[in-house]
Length: 166
Image 1 (cartoon, rainbow, N blue to C red):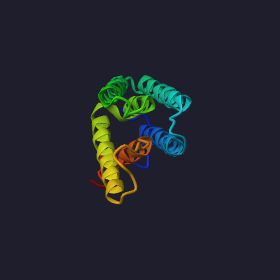
Image 2: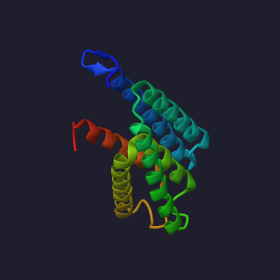
Image 3: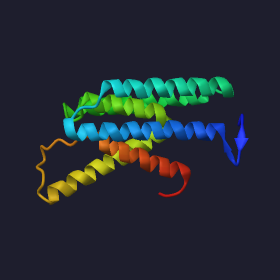
């Protein structure tokens, strides 16, 4: 239900754009700190989760549709669970911050888009590793921060979602 329409944009569209911009801005900052400090802030992850949860609950109360909350929860479980499995299998190759980042980002993306995000982030990270190895800028034991690849993958998923690319 579109509860207000102005010039072809609904309040839901504007609300969703604001939530997406908040996610992108926070992911950009987390990427920057992950590159510099090799840390992903638990406080920022909690802020993302609380802000996203509050906006979804408020929107669902207004729309009287709870499917978005269910989709967000499924995305969080799927994203976090998938990355946690990789965390266990890689024996330290993926940090706990990356697992939490995937869970929170999955909350924003939903269950379908979190799979696309995971796939794109893995491809970007693998491509970067291959390029660094080829250029002899790294060896096979080098550790790369993963948040920048998640950030770029989220942008790619947003582009795919709008149908303006990919």
